[in-house]
Image 1 (cartoon, rainbow, N blue to C red):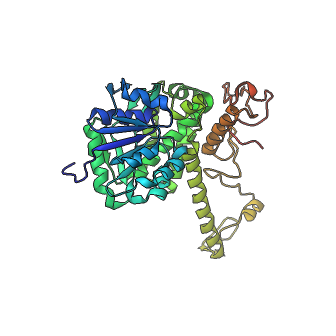
Image 2: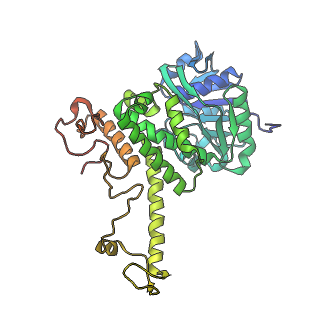
Image 3: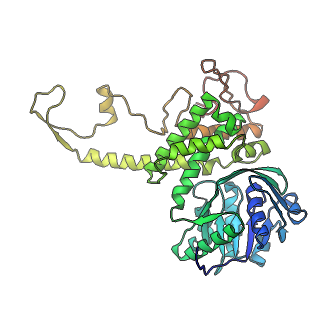
Length: 416
């Protein structure tokens, strides 16, 4: 990476879950002064003694220098870099608590899943002090400060939000790489965020709904078809919003999933632990971007309606050489002519298909995960019976508290 002017010495990691524990352990092993922060004392106490234990694709054990349950302690003795590794749902609270941390030479890295997590931090801290990372590993907690890494696809990526902070981004990458957590600087972080988000969107909610591992999903033909729909829909939304996923993105996703083995993705871990999932920052953001793209399309269509385009030449039912003026037809005009309505990628009004999704695969997966969360809170949740024609259980979302009679619509869909 060459000579880098920014060389951080002190790090803090907020979030002592599996992802936070991994980055804290690597930094501590690399000789940096590391403070691990989490509101749950039982998660951080073992990080001091005997230390954080990592097994799986990487094996190490390292002790952090300090632990704390208060973010305010980080502000009183500020580190050079704070790595935020909490669930995206906690970001607004974390961002507000870190407002006093902002200062010259101090940076906050969003080391998380999901789309636009860095923007939540930047609203409170300013873009100059915020960096975004894309983390390429899968991990499972075994015990407090004890984590198994199921797969680790190096390198990880980091980019600054403000060009003035480029040296800091490169310096942090260099520090992480020296510790064994290979990380490189990129100028295309948003493309990489979307590459990972679409991948998460196709597996996380399906695993959470069915309680199956990634291997079990990919070997089930019915569920594999749902994954296929989610990949294609997410990729189409990304490309419609001009994010570059690469020409080989689909086979990359399939290979990634097949190589994951019997791994439980984070959303399934959240459901099993009774935590709120990150569905809003994954599938929810894909839906949000699709709706924005649809709104832009409506504006362009309205503009075309106001300025019809002339087409010349023969048409069906007209003699050769007849000249006609044809504008963009309204929906009512198409209906009168019997022209079927085009099926959008993601339909708010609903385009039913053989799996019962009304509103696109991403919407269905998001809604299905919401139904699970409602069931965990003791509320009555719809439950889908076995679909005999497909010979597969689509979903069972609420255990014994769910209604047992068939309700006629998929548990992945909103109730009518």
